[in-house]
Length: 182
Ligand code: ADP
Ligand code: 5GP
Figure (cartoon, rainbow, N blue to C red):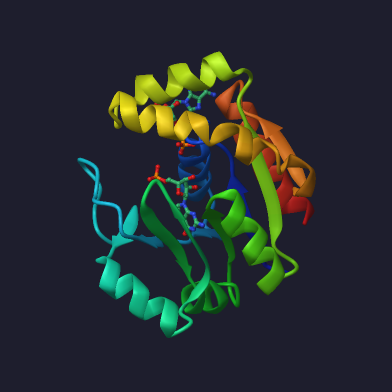
């Protein structure tokens, strides 16, 4: 059986985290890649679970050691996928990565079989409602994230699959189906 590497992207607040978390809780054959970041942990986030939280110096060192499958900077912080973890895990299981557009395209260059999935909102108004409703960012950070939406969506054509997250369960099932098909 072939194991799938999938990158899930889409604007902040669209529901990527909700989709990925449900899938990995239901499926023993799919593992989530835990990224490294220099952004500070949000309340309730645990080092090694949501992210590996690194200092800028530690992150820089790992870039130099070519330890990332891909990495990118946004909102003033670095985010990257540990290469050794992903390649090792793919020997026995499928891997799902929740990463941004730039990172996904980089991952596809390094690993051409990587399946690119973009999650889009039913409308921009609904996206804003979810981002505000989540309550993890202040208004300035929300504006930053909203400003990036158009950029993310402009790369839609480069994706293998585009899924509208209107009803969450429907979107989850669509992503699961892609794993089974690939
Ligand atoms: P992301 O990981 O893309 O930033 P989250 O998964 O954190 O997004 O979702 C943002 C907010 O939207 C959360 O409060 C989540 O519960 C909510 N949400 C996710 N999917 C849906 C959906 N289909 N309908 C309504 N609310 C949703
Ligand atoms: P957040 O700060 O909300 O957790 O994530 C902000 C953005 O960083 C999201 O768009 C998320 O997809 C992206 N991201 C998270 N991990 C990675 C990663 O390892 N690499 C890249 N390129 N982007 C990431």
